[in-house]
Amino acid sequence: MAQQVPAMFLADTTGLDFLNSIATPVDVPVDWIDDGEGLLAWLHQAELVPAEVLEDFRRSALPSEMNAVAAQARSLREWFRGFVREQRGAPLKPEALTQLEPLNRLLARDQAFLQIAPGKTTGAGLGLQAGRRWSSPESLLQPIAEAMARTVSEEDFSHVKACEGPTCTLLFADHTKGHRRRWCSMAACGNRAKQQAHYQRKHSRSIA
Image (cartoon, rainbow, N blue to C red; front, side, top):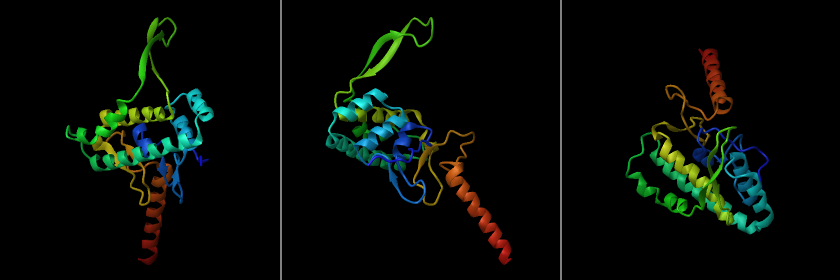
């Protein structure tokens, strides 16, 4: 069923935020796309699909259709997780393209297009505006695939990291100066690590 806990967006790249759509914020694992309604909610929070499109699917698609697409999304997520975990820590090499063939096949199904539209600022004249035909519930996978493709093509995988929290499963792109980020969040795993280190120092002094 749809999750009440807000999804986590800590990775600094939406493709990795998608992997983090299953996590353990406290003690119990939460899967934000465990069904069709969960997928719609996550896409809304990720701002990957216009709200009116999501509402159209919520009204018109059968729950079984949406649940099937959510299952596809979960399979896509775990496939991409395996790729990221294997490749992180070093720049991607051209040979990785073979492994990315499933993603390229999904991208090839997209029904995206461009239209001439008014400029985004006053006096800007005309510009190009991206659009997409949302022909079926499966089309909701396309913006996810695009986000994954951007992560692969724009991120230096040398700086894709796993949180050092002992029970944390979150991944992130380290964009910090010096690339010294260790935690998914200082407020979560970072703070727990500081508390644990403080406890260990205090315990060591008490038995010294």
